[in-house]
Image 1 (cartoon, helix red, strand yellow):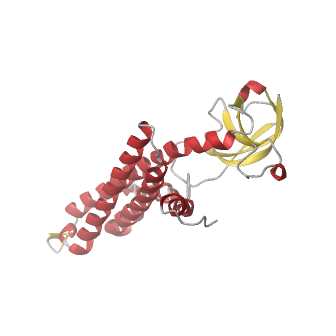
Image 2: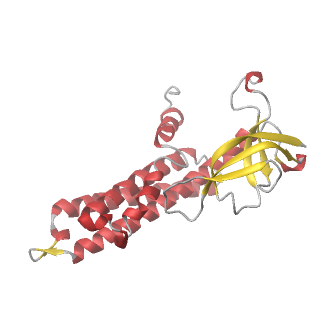
Image 3: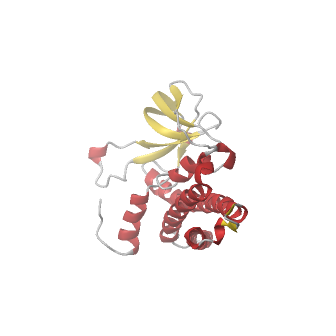
Length: 241
């Protein structure tokens, strides 16, 4: 068996799951040539002795809650080791592409929702006998936002298709996640603007989604790390970090 100690923040739904997959260093950092080596994956029962969960106060409209998990000499049986010892980074990276594709799909869906509300309001809201959507100052930004959302959707579909076919989905998955996050943020900001003061009310159900939509630029992978990946692995530029 293994004894695990340490802590990790932002564990989603930790109070509802049977097991939590933990990335754990099983070989000391100074004993590996590559910092990605020596990591192992374990399935940890959150009800085990030595496990403590603390809920984080995230202000996001989200069905799951976020937790910090503390491990204090938690005994984990050997059969809970996922794959080979020290191979965790390789397995973890294999799971990143579907996570980013899912994040892209979420961004596109949220963006379409808030933009749809903006378009509906722009049709219905009449000022000086003219729907506000008839003005290019609102119509053109909404057209641009729609274009960006659908481009992101196409990239997400390409990423999903490539992944399903066993191809190298990394470039598509990262670009889809980047494009969808930026398009969703653009759409939400615009939807608030189109609604004016009403956009900041809970009744319109737009401002309530802003923290969740804005989070997509940061998680599950940040905008900067995606750009690092594209620069190095797609454009072939030197590693920048």
